Length: 141
Length: 141
DNA sequence: CTTCATGCAAACCCTTTGCACGTCG
DNA sequence: CGACGTGCAAAGGGTTTGCATGAAG
Image (cartoon, rainbow over all chains, first blue to last red; front, side):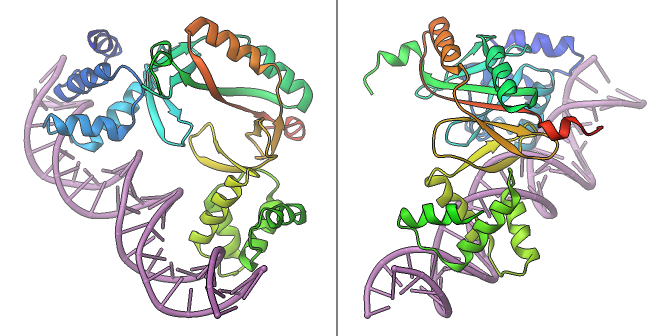
């Protein structure tokens, strides 16, 4: 699970310390989005003695490496999502929290159309999709 | 400027108090996105004696009424944007902060395609576009 | 007059920082 | 050994809340 994450970090010249290995394991165990507080709580529950600061620093590090991204949930909360280091968008399940990635689905034509109408020169965009994943569609709400 | 905003609130059964009138004026004077802190500062500068709490409560109220929306800037800051109470997306100028709205530009086909690929049932989405407005394109950076 | 909004300050997140100590390579 | 990571606690920024007072309808 988390081996590939650790391997990637190692390749980037990042030190693989105890806390980092443990956090990587906790993250891969979650499998979807989570908040910084979630991760802090996970670590506390296991009495790993990992401080808040370390969690935040590690999340920053992962974000710099491009294997983690910030997502703003519909309710305004900040969450982190593990992901591939290419440009893409997230599909977040509002029930179980799992996340899928989608690459270009024709968004460029949308931004081009918006640019044409508004006269803006578009530099970047952010698209987040929220809904129910296949598994959660089968569950009665 | 702010008259239409006040009228709308009045129609919704909202009390038009002094502080609210003043805040509405400050907001319409800004004309673009701004942070809560910006508005607090504006009020402080004019020595209107308006507290932070009132600013936040008023922004919440406007958001509930659908005439204001939360936007997360590329740098992660939270901003507020005055807008129409219909579904749309924002085009934010990263230089001057002005905001345009764009309605459906073919985004539905994008979400449909994403749904097809992933099996998700999409409930909502958030699209934010960042770039330079027509005026700012003419300015040397 | 009754209800609701306000200001103030304190309380509350969430996140970052400073620093002495510990660990990795 | 030397550079870097860690935990702790404190600081910081932004937002919310409790409460007595004041204004709106």
